[in-house]
Image (cartoon, rainbow, N blue to C red; front, side, top):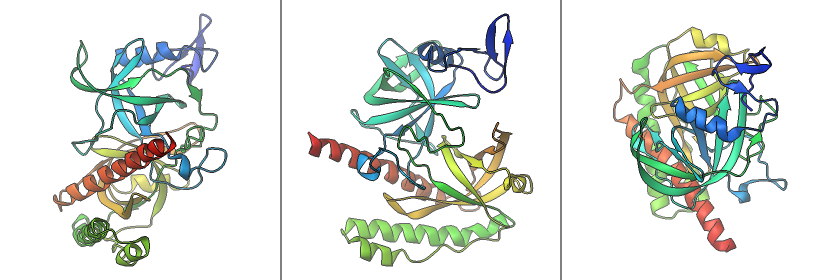
Length: 322
């Protein structure tokens, strides 16, 4: 299962150069062993809230950009019946996931990805050689499924739809302040409208203002593939990737609809890149609030509100179906 594109045979065994793990001939076999090895190496898996069935089409898939977020989380313990992960965070704020919530897990090794479905079993306190502290308990999956299309970061087997992102090289970092203030005001209007239970038409009229752009260069499109504690991971098509090396700092905008209508806007710095086998580029970015520190709490609130909305919809769907 651990095979990836840069593997080579050694004494009859195929080894993955990127992870040092033996690759299995059957790419969906040995996944429990792979999870144990990820844990032993202090590695991470990715998790997302299982897509709401009401937002999927007839065959369980969803089309187009969406507001599903994938979180990277360190795998801190593996037992016969459970996986334990470091509680996911967004810019230092804990993401609370309720017990009983259905989740999608993602194992990424090299260029290959496998998915599984699980559920949140609540929190636990873990003390072992690699981790001491709170952890989130997940049910051990019965099986994993290999993502057949490597270009499909929307993970067709799961129904997840990841946000499309627009990125601009930032020419003057000081120019972001006005853009962020307008974005903050729009989000506050959205929160106020929701607290007063306004209908969608009224909400739409309140959110007509597009945040003005700071001083930026030409835009490039991408897909938000994961969110870590202090930043995001993006996939950029090869034809646009050259712009990543023209500036160390960028302005970004992405949507988390339907649970948050105001787009997330923020400054971020490029930390690292690598070219995938399909020639697209993965970029790891960290958020940067140097010129407007108070904007951090608005970005955090938007992310947490989106996650809370996904949880609420899923749990309400299950209660109505019960």
